[in-house]
Image 1 (cartoon, rainbow, N blue to C red):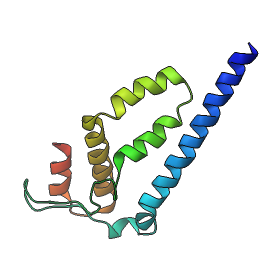
Image 2 (cartoon, rainbow, N blue to C red; image 1 turned 180 degrees about the vertical axis):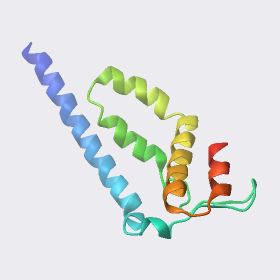
Image 3 (spheres, helix red, strand yellow; image 1 turned 120 degrees about the horizontal axis):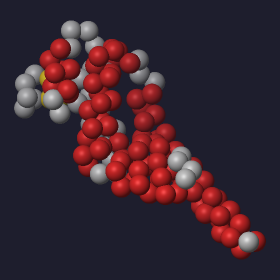
Image 4 (cartoon, rainbow, N blue to C red; image 1 turned 90 degrees about the horizontal axis):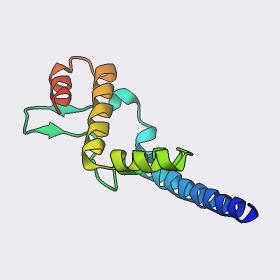
Length: 123
């Protein structure tokens, strides 16, 4: 029983280190965007082929997989975390996450954004 408790404590300590590392990376990744006013970042759609993302989606800019990793590490139950990782870290899930974020942003912070909302709702 004592060995099992030590294993659990070791895993918990390892997870905490992972979470700290991910949070640090997330803070560095998003610090330039956190100081902006929400209405100063705008999403524009000229046509179906011409979409202007206000923050590029890449490892160096808006990094959805990093944010999802942080969220998943916060789940304490191991089986639930593994199941959610399989679902959430899939490319389709990341796309849904990013499009949902921008749809919410556009609906609340961009006036006269029907074209942008329509585009995001169809993705």
